[in-house]
Length: 103
Image 1: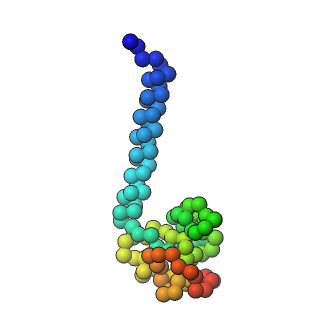
Image 2 (image 1 turned 135 degrees about the horizontal axis):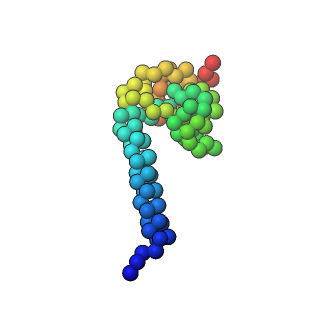
């Protein structure tokens, strides 16, 4: 029995799509392994992902140093990175409520 051309094309497309998706997820996994989420250090529109209710993902921070917006930073550097809105003055490993607005 011969395979029809549309069936072969569909199978090829499915394989190619699967390979592309697995390659696309590899950099994020590697990035997450060497980095940590740091809240309160992202500039407006430059966060790496979700910034609280009403936001979707990357680039949705409404203001600089937003307490619920995070950015990937090298592991161990978050709490050494300045954040003018943080209660400690540095990035936090968890979301926080800003103590003051960034200037």
